[in-house]
Amino acid sequence: MDAINQFLTLFFSFKAYVMLPLIILVIALAVRVPLPQALRSTVSLAAGFAGVFIAFDFFVANISPAVQQLSALRGLNFPVLDVGWPPLAAITWASPLAAISIPLVLVVNLAMLALGWTRVIYIDIWNYWHFAFVGALVMAVSGSMGLGLAATLTVAIYCFKLAEWTAPDVERELGLPGITASPVSANGMAPYIVCVDWVLDRIPGVSRLGYFPQRDAAPAGAAPGTWAALLGLLHEPMVIGCIMGLALALAAGYDLRATLELAVHIAAVMFLLPRSGGLIGEAMLPITQALRTQVERVFPQRKNLIVALDTGFLMGHKAIIMTGLILMGVAIVLALLLPGNRVLPLGDLPGLISAVSVMVLMFRGNVVRAVVGGIPVIAAYLLISSNMAPLVTTLALKTPSFAAHGAGELTAFIDGGIPVRFWVFHLYQGHLWAFLVIPPLALALWWTRQRSLRKSA
Image 1 (spheres, rainbow, N blue to C red):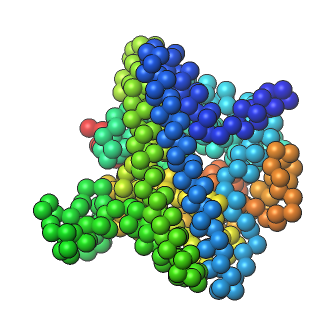
Image 2 (image 1 turned 90 degrees about the vertical axis):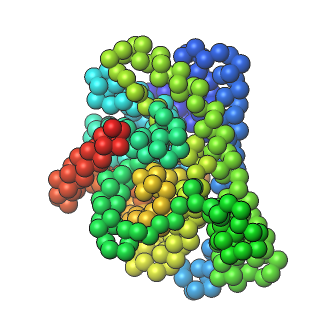
Image 3 (image 1 turned 45 degrees about the vertical axis):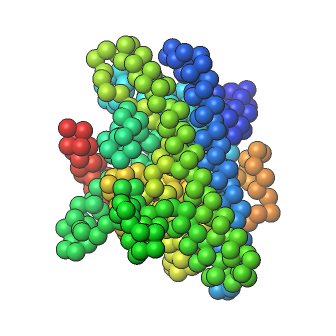
């Protein structure tokens, strides 16, 4: 078991944009994609993912000093440090159940495919740690590997079904059939989104509000200097990024040079992300089509299979980029004002683009609706990550592969605050409120499934 854990630690120490393309290359060759095309797709996929990671790292490096200075100007102190997802992944792979959870989740996925209980082929092995993390937390507090593995499978099965039920939204908004978003951080809120969408449709006036940068633009033939052409600029993520950079720099008290630099840097990130996301989507199409064909040969009674991928391929959608950027600003403001919050979003902040991606697609690319629906989600991220910080810090200090000593309390603003994982964590501790959530959640899941069936039809 120790040898397997050491192998997993080594395996997952590679960057996702190195490890995942290698896995995809093996899969491509296994499903008989011609070698030249498989190599071309793999290199394109690696370049696209690397572009997303580089853009996010650059974003964090530029925005963190501004956010910290803004907090200092307001005289606020946040005792919990948002360092992003690395400590959470390190905790997961250091847990004794990690070696069992990966093959177990894979076997369960294949079994569900064979039995017709899901149409999702979950090949995003990198994001298996999202399932195993809650198992590691449950095992840490209960001492039971059985409960930890049960919690892991609960989140995995939940994610398989939500990935399946949100696939029609991915196809409608991006024109990519047979592909869906894999992370539970992205699709886990789908039942909540369905409920919010229903409520907003029934509020007079609000139901008509909409901002659709993916399909709206300046009218054709609009003169360059007209108001229509100027308003059309607001449909470009890099323009909004520039404006957000200016606003943040001014709020942080930056001088003119630093203000302009930050504005240009954020604009550059918002320009690069869609290009990288588009590269991922193009690279995966031939491989996913070949994979579906081969799996359908093995399971001839199973049709319309769906391949679950990391949200990198969604980064080409303007409304997703725009919503994520706006909600980053909202997250900073909420962190300053929300009672009970102890964390200032920093390391995990750019992850909001991924986390809200499925929400934007389910809202049909409506940025206004996605921002309204996203505000309560951000509040939940802040409060849950604050609540879980002591346990995360304790486990991180016991993890040899992550240097956490002297850093104070640690968390990840998004990955440490996912509501579904928080609920499963308390469910497997036997807390009453977690059991009381089951009936309304079951109803919301049924509603989400019915919506998916209508969209598919």
